[in-house]
Image (cartoon, rainbow, N blue to C red; front, side, top):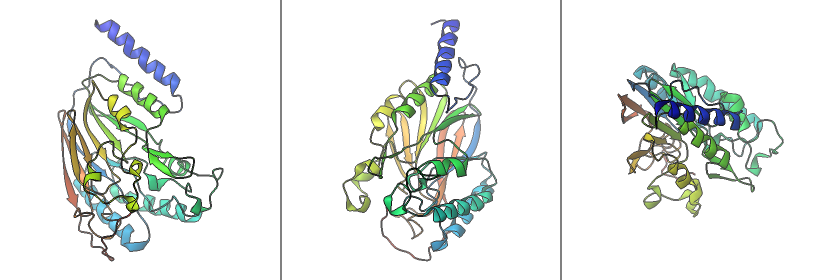
Length: 318
């Protein structure tokens, strides 16, 4: 395919995407036919802060954020579950939790991108007393308070970052891990708008791939596997074909685990809150992940920050 033909098709794909998704604008990938050279820098991926006034959690988050700030990353990405918990509480409690997170987040002193987690949805459990017509219901509180879309992409120094929304509220006012149809279409168009060789990092709260079910306790002992990983992960992964996806950074399970599948690394990363502020989770202590990008190659290391639980307890939560 000659250069002009390729440029035409890439421009057509980007234009079609903009028309199809007016509410979720794509970035303007100038010179889409030629990748920007991949540079070298560090960023931080932290996930599952589960901030709350109880269990010394706000202090723990502040400790973690101070250590992240000291590492001087170019930016940070939160992998979701910022608060604990907006699903089944009153609006007053949910607002208080988001206020607490945003005050504590200021300690980071770095540009910050957010991923939505299941515990960040307001009121979808009937116990909350919220109605679907209430202000902030579902994902609207996250969008309003955090000021971010629930899925989006951005470019930084030659790398393309894709942040997915893996939380799908179900008609029975529960949720499952799923990438909905409109987001799948958006993802296909977003990937089509960048050069095939461009290095990509994907972020999702609920894992696309994990081996957790082979060794970890099940959520509440129930066989609901669609809350452990994304139910339609095969449809998402199929879109990665013929693209240079270096890694998928995942939260939700509070463990460090690496699965290599079709030359892509699917990394579950440990949680800031460890075992929901009750000590280590399956022997993985409270911490965050420093990701190093070096001219198109990726590596990472897990950092702890010295938190001591005021209520050690090996219990499992979903």
